[in-house]
Length: 188
Image 1 (cartoon, helix red, strand yellow):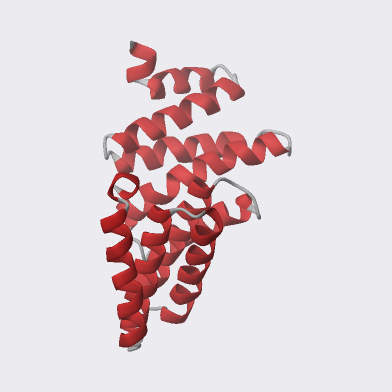
Image 2 (cartoon, helix red, strand yellow):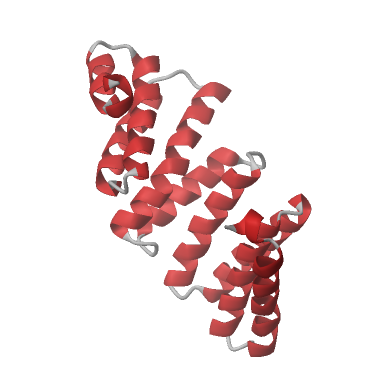
């Protein structure tokens, strides 16, 4: 099906016709499809076009939701094309976090925290990375999610290791291994 395989063409036509709402939807589909193919530069291009169109919508909760969907997809694409430590990567994840506010699903919150953590970690901003790792731990514990808990403990262990707190680091890394061993179906 042409529409499913090349949504960017449909998005382009809707954009040219001034049909903003369907164009936005198809730019997001095009961006996500490109991401699924690891075509990150292409994904960035499509997602930015969609974000630009969302700016033309009247302010509303629906507009915020659409913009958030674009930024959640854009974060990993920018991280892949520009690097985890790039200022643009931090900006994208920070904007996504602002759009989330205190809400969002567990996956959305963890996506933003993951990107933020990687940015701080790759810039050797260990104190900031540790704070984000703590937020990940709290979120995972609140939701009792072993996969997220494993990731959060890995972040804590890694960061504490870099900071020289080797005993505490080992506790978190061993917890990561234990969670992975006992929850293989959830974590895989």
